[in-house]
Amino acid sequence: MSTLSRRRRFTGFAAAVGAPILLLLVLLPLRDDLNLASDVALFLVVVVLSALVGGLRPALLAALVGTVVLNFWFTAPFQTFTISDPNNVVALFAFAGVAAMVGWVVDLASRRAAAAAAAAEIEAADRLRTALLAAVGHDLRTPLAVAKASVSGLRSPDVSLDRADRDELLATTDDALDRLTGLVGNLLDMSRLQAGAMPVRPRSVALGEVLSRALDDLGVAPRGVVLDVADDLPAVVSDPGLLERVLVNVIANAQRFSPPDRPPLLHAVAHEGRVEVHVVDHGPGIAAEDRERVFRPFQRLGDTDSTTGIGLGLAVARGLTEAMGGTLTPRRTDGGGTTMVLSLPAEPSS
Image 1: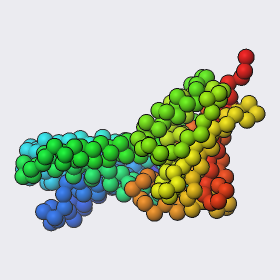
Image 2: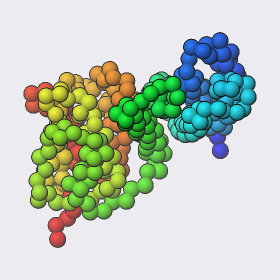
Image 3: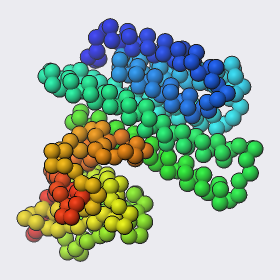
Image 4: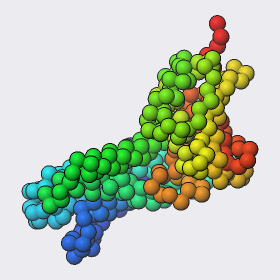
């Protein structure tokens, strides 16, 4: 049952219908200047606004209204529900799917925040929703726009592409969709963690196997990460899938802040019945007073590259680690930088 007031739900439905109409009036004169990717991104922001105000049902209504408006006024032939370009069909289906997922995530976060009793928790939830709106409005739009532009180039009959150009566009599209999948995945993971609904299936697993899969997921180039992992490390007790996602997020964060000539170092040791994984970077480092802030959702201290994510990687990594009975703590790297220490229980020796 929704915890939102009747007034907020009514306002949400009004926004779900009224905001797309207002946006249509603004964008229609600019139809020849803006492409469909830009229009889709702006209508996605309307879905998020409807979810923040009124919950899931207004968000789904906003997604439906936005899909109809985009189809009727912004896809050729105009003012019909026929779509001549199959690429636009893909774009509209992508908008509807992403809008529904984003609306569900925002609604879940909003309802959990509204149920909080303490004033401090409510204030924190308000900041979270504001950050979510800003992040989704830009960071989800970027890979979606890149994928749309690449596919448009591939399907355009007016552009002559050789094999190398096509391969490059396909690689660009694949990379953009991977980023979009990662962004939505982190949003869903954070929602499950906050709801206490993250399934954990711990078992004995070799760290090297999970680390190898994590590096494959990241597409790490040779010497992109320096490995120092002993062959005789004991197995760890963890959920292999969750551990892989923790390693991906922590290593990706280290790569983001490492200078090109000093790649991150990954060092694993056994210590007092536990296995510790030290992910070392030689970047700008984190001030002592900010070391816990980096684990808050939507925090990107010192990260000016807004295309790298929405500040959920370390928050999700710590949440998943603690769900497996481990810890994730930052330390100062000797000589400058940050070391993330992932500690997990080792398999008891027989």
